[in-house]
Amino acid sequence: MTEHHSPAVGAGTRIGDGTLAVRAGLPEPVKNEPTMPGPVFAAHFHLPGDVEGPYTYGRDTNPTWTLLEQAIGELEAPGEEVHTIAFPSGMAAVSAVLLSQARTGDTVVLPSDGYQALPLLREQLEAYAIQVRTAPTGDDAQLAVLEGARLLWIETPSNPGLDVCDVRRLVDAAHAGGTLVAVDNTLATPLGQRPLALGADFSVASGTKGLTGHGDVLLGYVVCRDPELAADIRRWRKIVGAIPGPMEAWLAHRSLATIHLRAQRQWANALAVAEALADRDDVSGLRYPGLASDPSHKTAARQMRGFGSVVSFTLPDRAHAERFMAALRLVEDATSFGGVRSTAERRGRWGGDDVPEGFIRFSAGAEDTDDLVADVLRALELAGAGTEA
Ligand SMILES: *Cc1c(COP(=O)(O)O)cnc(C)c1O
Figure 1 (tube, rainbow, N blue to C red):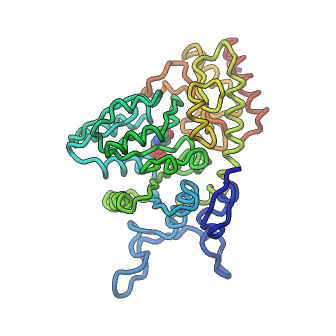
Figure 2 (tube, protein in one colour; figure 1 turned 30 degrees about the vertical axis):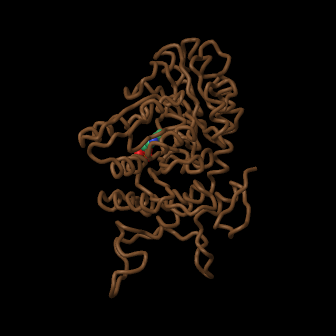
């Protein structure tokens, strides 16, 4: 078990991830107060006299965000002083970093195989005369296009292709040239990967996926060490007004208590599904960084603490994939990933990713492993036989 320090249980106490998760962001105990306070719904706060104290106006700060941000910071960088800024969605967090850091004339490096909204963001950056270069995640190909860039954006493992790059290697090269590095940590979650410990300047994620894990809340966050960078991000949130609602922030914090339990089961299920698919004739292009045979496994094993809940693979054609999806009983046909209920989708239906027609992005939930694997194998048999009943 990996151990670390957490302010949640007092300086100098070494605790594991499960303990950290259930205690993350809890306030100091106060007699007769709830152990975990409910959401604070307030647009403004009592403010007689001078403008001082932490809570003045609800677009700037909110006590429910404070606890959530503390919790996420503890998970992303246990025992360290970091700054966390919560956002109402992953894209709000992604845009906050890119649009607050890049100026007209700057160059930004993005992955060419990253999240499907990145090309939209690229258009926006280019409209501000910010130059954008892209390269694939695999083989650390972004190294070749770093020269003179203001910011390097890394997504590892990439969504949906599940390629992995060597974060430390990219960070060292970027920092040597004065380039900042942000890592999209959505897929791994802070339990699976700690980008700041790998040298990144920003860890950024959608909390909509595995972080909160119930498919009922959208959220995003940025974590960084540098107070000036944190001030840039906070200022961006203030001027754009991209703030999480107190209810969403509270739901997210409540969900964090189970992130370790959920992740353990979901990661084990993902590995079991990947292993069950490994030698089948009807499955090609199988990717899961936790599989010893995966091209990403060596790098992933060095820098990740868990390999995530997402498995990707390709069935022979679109009709075959559609039959597979329709035959699943325990796996919902839905986008997104990281939830306690397994989901999958034929990713090509969105049109935004460079994937084959039969490509399936599969997210393992917290079902019993045997049930989930049996459902997947049964659906594959039916899809292969040309039926979906
Ligand atoms: C979903 C996702 C996002 C965007 O998050 P939202 O909460 O949907 O805005 C960003 N990056 C990755 C890798 C994602 O999977």
